[in-house]
Length: 236
Image (cartoon, rainbow, N blue to C red; front, side):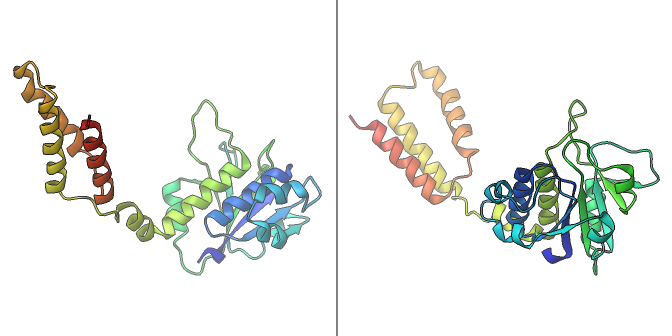
């Protein structure tokens, strides 16, 4: 699935940014990197150093003399721009982007401009859509590798919703009975230490302890650690 997508860097100026882009691509399972008219000798040691474990992407990256050749393998190209342009090109939201990436028989190229100026209107003319990553209106400019990271993550998220959901919600949370046992144990120890004085405050203090511990979502291991901590602090 990830082979359907390619990153196109137009006139990148820093080897460090190319390396960081390659690293971001590998983080999310992408490997197709096209580079158009790099401003530095490529590949160079800075690109390789910042790519860390993504040497394979750097080594397999293809360098082109023009955008037309770089986009040839793709049947759809989306350009990234930090600002809206006065050209007849549809600007899409991230929500619309998520719908596009799920299309079948799609080879999608994602085009990013040089660090200092971004893509020119001529560069944008080769794309189907323009995507603007939402940022603060006070500072819209994103680092090249950060833009690539965010877009790769959006694709990864859209194509792996079940996997992400399972990872996020697959942890087994301890039962309320076990949590209640810990709370009771804690309250008994605190009573022995005469914490609930004056007595009229006891009800509200126990209520706050309940609120504090019951809103946690610990697993059994974490609960055992908490019980050990409470017991250890109660010893003389």
